[in-house]
Length: 191
Ligand SMILES: [Fe+2]
Ligand SMILES: [Fe+2]
Image 1 (cartoon, helix red, strand yellow):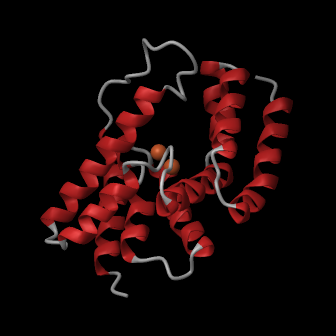
Image 2 (cartoon, helix red, strand yellow; image 1 turned 135 degrees about the vertical axis):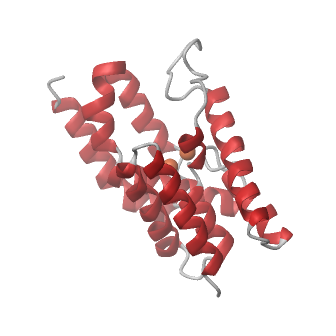
């Protein structure tokens, strides 16, 4: 399998997040790629590109749509849908500029556009890898930086949602100890 296009996509993502001063977020993307490979060793290039670029919308974030919405601001369905759909468009536009073949572009678009909620087997795989990488790399940040903003309940609901959305048994087994550790840390947090 050629990984030329994957490498270019990875560089595009890294540059975009460096530009907004969020270098810390990059680990989450690289580890999502890692977990995709663990869950499916023969994953194709479109899956790897989707894994590294799934949150690309956050590097081009416009106004926060969740601000005026009711319910948990981190789980607002309109915000999540906007996030996954815009991300799919951004990475597809990038791939068009790289003269990638249409089949690959369509597949990446299909995958990223449902990475939060899942759908078919491959969309679920990306969602599951994202959840594992979230607990591995992002949960600490949520406790330290977002609990003071939103409170423990909102963060607990986000953790529950990220864990409960996992489809495959294997991904669930990998994520479970990380999820439990995050819940414990959240509970013990003095903020
Ligand atoms: Fe996302
Ligand atoms: Fe993510």
